[in-house]
Length: 272
Image 1: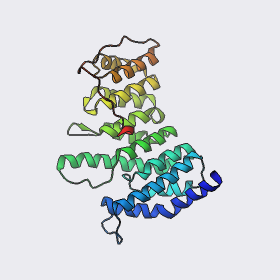
Image 2 (image 1 turned 30 degrees about the vertical axis):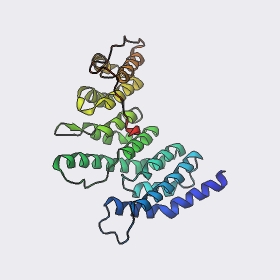
Image 3 (image 1 turned 180 degrees about the vertical axis):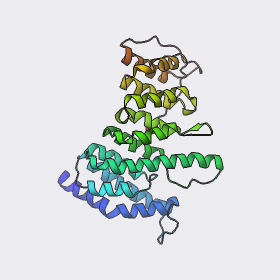
Image 4 (image 1 turned 90 degrees about the vertical axis):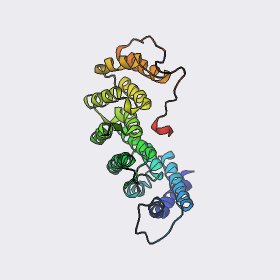
C-alpha cells in the first residue's frame, strides 16, 4: 500500500537521482570532465529505478516526492528517458509547481531538436541532447496543465525550417498537445502550416486534423477539405472527416486514399 510504497519511492529518487544524472552525462558523452566512470548498463538500471519510483508516486497521486522530482527535472539532460516518467507522473499528481521546470526542459528540447536537425546537414555529432519521447512527454504534461506559457516554444518548434526540413516528431508532439496550450489564433497559424507543408509528414497532418476538430477551428475548414481530397491514408481520411464533422455538425463523404493502394501506418511521437 501507499504507506510503505510512497516513502520507498521517495527514498529511491532521493538516493539515485544525482547518480543517474552523473551516469547519463558520462555515458551519453555530455560530461567531458567527469571524474568518475559509468557503464550504459549501470545508467540504465538507475534510469529504471528512478522511472519506476516516479511512476509509483504518480499512481498514488502523492506529492510526497514532488520537490525531489522538480529538482530532478531541472537537472537531468533532456535525452534521459527517466524524464518521460517524471513528466507524466507530475501530470497525474497535478502539482502546478512543475510547470516552470517543464518549460525549461521544453526550451532545452527545442534547442536540442534544432541542433540534431542541423547536425544531420553538417555531418557532425550533435552538441546538445534531444530525445523525441522526452519532448512528447513534456509537451503532453504541459498540455494537461493547460500551460499557455508554453505556446511561444511550441510555435518555435513548429515554425523551425532548416533547408526545407522540419522538426517532424517534435511537431507531431506539438500538434497533440496544442489544444491545451495554444489559443485558437495561434493554433490556426501552426495547423495551417502543417497542412500546407508536406515536409512535416503524414503523422503531423493526422494530429493536426484531430486538433483542428478538437478545437473546432472553423477557419481551417478549407485546409481540412483539401486534405480530405488528397489524403494518403485511411487514418488521415478518418481523422480529417471527424474534424470536419466536429466543426460543421455534418459528416463528409469519405474518399479513397489518393496515393497508395493500402494504408500507411501513422506513427505518432508517443509510439516511437
